[in-house]
Image (tube, rainbow, N blue to C red; front, side, top):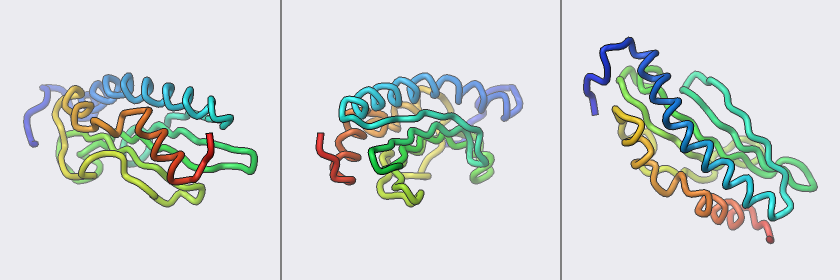
Length: 143
């Protein structure tokens, strides 16, 4: 979607949308942390500004070290493809940083003009229970 989002410069519009989406991302990450901690796993949550946008990284560590990372990135369409808009990219990465699963529908397919649309489009990718089940199954972690 390419719409006129706001009368503000794009960097301010992106910042406002990111802050709104981050509320939902943080809620999901904290719930996922709770679920993983119940499986005797240690979780570390960090947020960073990256070249693609605003990223929240949930690192999961077991007895032998890093197991996987859940990467929630609010992608800045202007930085990624020169289009005004935002989408949420949720990926499951192994300990080497390789993508093992995309948890958001149609990665990079559409950019949205409101925080509400971004969250709705992410759908199941923002389900802590779904992310927990995917990660436990993929990495063969016994609860």
